[in-house]
Length: 337
Image (tube, rainbow, N blue to C red; front, side, top):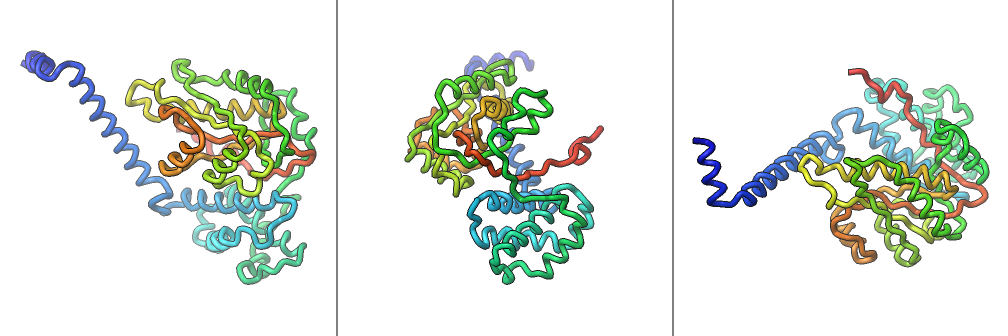
């Protein structure tokens, strides 16, 4: 009976339409399930567990790290981030759960360095960061171990590990934001992309695309939309836009595969640029539809392609200032299940 009913439905509606309706329903169902998980577990809607609070803490201390990169430090920069970090680092109930987790320790160190930098320049921040708060943080952190919020490296030091084993090379890669303004030769860019093509992709479909923008006015407008490269835009004369093409995915289960394949290619491209001595910094494109529509007015990227990341590139200055960006120990992220 079921077999005849199925044949009747196919005859009445058409096999193609039935298959389309099934795929449409499964797409809606799966995207709805994705949304439920995002709603329940992201920090967008709720900040109700320690991982979410730690994520917000890292965002704020990294803002301070980036502010320390400027040779001419802006007085009282990141005031709002400092105030939020006070509320976190001063909450004993929260800290008791974290104990000595790596990122909490780094947050203390960044805050201590922030105070010291302002004090060394005789800049008053007492209205939002008191000496009492500073001393309490010092008591919690027994030593700074030579900690600096930003490190200065000369150009040769940045690239001296390029011919060494991968474990040394990988640790030598840094996000560099300060460029001379000189452009990278097109053949070097092509060579870097060719090397990045060694990245694996689902069924070897290789859906990633790289768009080069060299129009300075367009670059400035794009980075203004991105919003995270302020203070460094002046000498950015080349911008790579990494995308991944939706045309290459054919099942509902692959609805998020473009982010996976795009992310794998991105990391390979960053290593490849580093190997070719090209300074770069991945600029997060976690933007909304309205932002993507604004970008569409500036550059023509096919609608089928999803932007994965923006990558400003250039020749590094003789002295490069980089953030510490302390990594977690393996035990914080590795679990046997």
